[in-house]
Length: 335
Image (cartoon, rainbow, N blue to C red; front, side, top):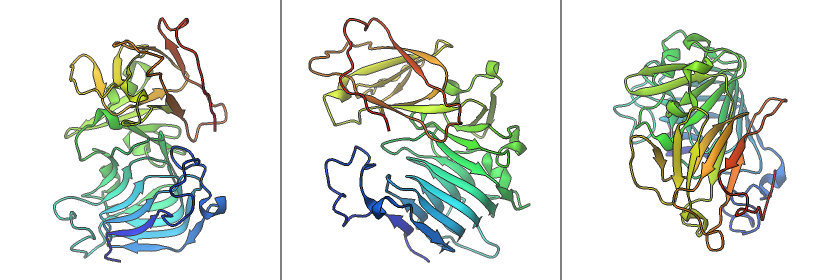
């Protein structure tokens, strides 16, 4: 109550916290002895950020969760599951939420950061003047948050799905939110199996595929039945892999450049200095390196993240243009 952060989970004193052999995102750590911790009947009230998980090897589980009058209910930072609960943005009669920045803007349900969270059987209320989904950045991005069994207070809360980002329309911060059963998006033209695409819908969304574009006051929302995975290059400042500039072209002929410490702006090409991009499952992309690449001194390193895929999980094809005699895989890891 009345704290900066309600519950932040980061095992700073654990032996694995500074270990070098537990993976780039600490997914190989032994936090909680690799047993998913369960928190029952937790209530968080008037905080700046109610939930902020920072562990990747387990999924934090919250059963019968309750939250009210928080500036941000959840940072969608690392794996987390809400199993039943009530979340209220602004409760009746409340004059001020927790957090120093709460004046002048509405409450935020989910700040889309690293991902990935699962929300089951949650009732939402008090967001008539709030934001349900807000984009953020993070140094890694899993593709989806999942919602099912959502129920709504009849107070205008559902209208907070549009617009879905109060900050700038960051092209490098595209995220998707998957609606398992239709309880999240049916009221805005979606349904079971649809996803909300926040920001950057000119890359994923294509009305020729049956996708829907929704805009309101500069906030971009796309609705699609496509599923996506996340292509991520080596993080910046971990050279020499950060120096290679990638150009990726989709089947519609749209080009996207990232990596290489990009800082240029080109109205015809989307350029992103943050090396990540969501790709549509089942599709093929062409990759080339517009500045060339010295494989002896630089190399290319990337990973592809996919979460909550259906049983008939698909793949993405990257076709490297003109690389058959130059590019040889040296290290491949799945997990």
